[in-house]
Length: 431
Ligand code: UD1
Image 1 (cartoon, rainbow, N blue to C red):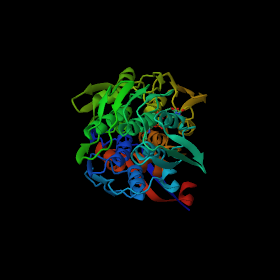
Image 2: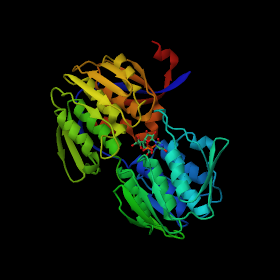
Image 3: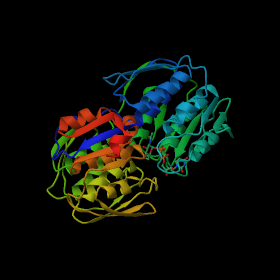
Image 4: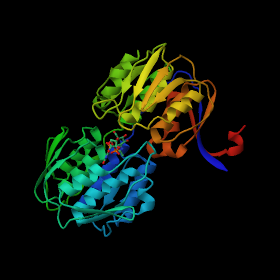
């Protein structure tokens, strides 16, 4: 049996410059938001990733014409001929983010049937907030055979109160409100840059929005959206943060470009506490690792708190720090699967109820065969492999393909050895 794996070699200090790709988590709702518009849209800086291709397939299955993303980040979406409102289970189950098609389909066509989603296995990820938002906008919602079925002749503008500042629910509510009859106000909106980006994209399509970037957003609904446009997606702050941590954790120095430094503030504050030198430019951040990393405590939270999507990666650096660190995961409490694997590589970590106490020790990691259980956990294991003595073989290549464009090439630029292999056999793994 063959297992798609990532082979990583301890590579010493990483040096050089890499460029961040476009943001996966911004591109996905933006592609979904194209469903609101009956004219062609050209997107730029879209990362060529598996998740983006799945979203393209979702739109294509509904009747949209889509092409790309091509190697320079270009993608075209034309939703003029959409004639279905029921994305297929096979696609939605592969990626939770496809649930953000609910809002735009319902708003434009008055009907949507979206299967309850799959995605990364990082704890229960309910959609109650999405449903509550659609109901507030006047939709009838029922659950039938594993699908959410939503109907409304025309959504009507309303006060939408989210009890959790969910990223996906805010995006779904914004897209639905864009074509509702009248004005809507979304209270307790998520503040993440990928939510702000959806506001910017809707504005670029002519939707009037006030309060972009705040927790109370007013949307003036339009009867229809019909405008051709070009739009460039923001850089991927999580990918950028992963490379910054890789460079600094290896004791090297280097730069990540094509980023918005303010999007990474929660990370750079923590990196400085760890003794890492951080210099911010206009669209890049330069980091230099210290001889010995200092311990610190991390508590994940919604933006502008520390992003849960960088918790596994920063935790790897803390296993190498000189002292005790504590990591509290408050967003997805079960996002702790990387810790037992790090322990197998030599780290000392105790976990309970979403908390980890890490007894850091410089140089403690050695390459072994490990498993990854989700996208960011897989990225963390790649970092651990780069910092370890010897070779690390990580199952979970498909996770990395979902979220990191050209990872082997980018690490090669920095002097790191990361190899994707669809050819690792069970016999090789058991040697
Ligand atoms: C998005 C990101 C994901 C990131 C997360 C938090 C995408 C494609 N994914 O996921 O990478 O880790 O934001 O920054 O953009 N919740 C509910 N009910 C709901 C919705 C959410 O209880 O209806 C809970 C979730 O279980 C979780 C928390 O709210 O504990 C945050 O989830 P949410 O912000 O919705 O994350 P996603 O949009 O799924």
